[in-house]
Picture 1 (spheres, rainbow, N blue to C red):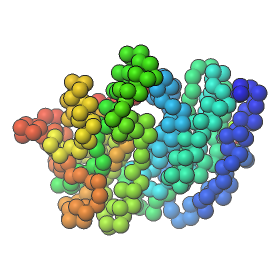
Picture 2: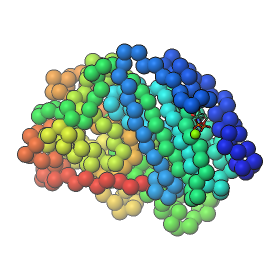
Picture 3: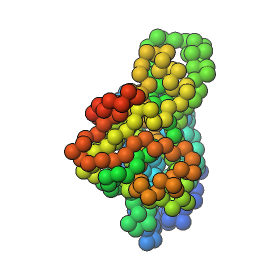
Picture 4: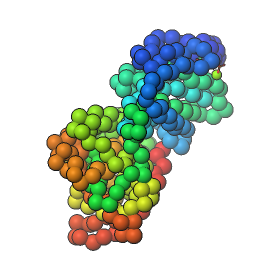
Length: 337
Ligand code: ADP
Ligand code: MG
């Protein structure tokens, strides 16, 4: 169905008609000029991300349903990266005439699945026609106990540097998708090339916000001194934390967590897996620092790896190679397609 058959209001109804707020902090959801939220005595966290077709995603290989999931998940990840609990999202869309009602329903199916998974309410948005392509802007809202938000600026000398999960997998997934696109592979050829690489593809197409780690850290009684999520790549995020905290760091190449399929794919593509782990983006894992006194407490926390430690600002931000050489980290901001 063409969107103009429904019109703006018809489309909004079609996409959002079945949305029922679940959170006690959502006093009023979709349907009025504003949503009404009530966060009690907690501090409110607000973050926004914009996704442009052709810049941040390529619909030649990204299914709309996955895109919807990812758009929500990456915003939730920002709330989580402050140690917060996400509770609401707002979705703004610019839609060109090439999209049909069914396309937008696919997008919303992914967004609704993510909202259900992360237990957040979709409480509003804006919808407009655009000249070219699809634009998705999402705002996420969450809350945190007063004074407990984990900023980038709190890392201190001798803190341990930790990261969750593994790194470089989303980047390797992107390389595989791009390789098939550039080769002009048929669906059947791509399917064959993708076989056995479901993990890295999923890491690229359907990232997870590590809300589970925030819960586990809280259970373990650990309050990280600094934290952020890894969207642009480990090097770049480490440098952000160090600059904000006025410290330096050493991270160890042989401590960087890498998944087997990522390493295999890197070898196949003649890429250095350590470079991919350092500079590949979009893993949405958490990077954080903890006080040394929390060392015993962090050991049993699942899926957390200690990769280095914080030092003086004057020592700089370095990678210690397998051979024991120190090389300065470089920020290579990552531009996903
Ligand atoms: P306004 O004229 O006040 O901007 P709209 O007609 O744009 O109101 O929106 C009507 C209601 O639908 C509002 O509650 C708004 O938040 C919601 N809404 C609009 N677009 C979207 C969307 N893409 N997703 C979710 N809710 C939306
Ligand atoms: Mg509007």
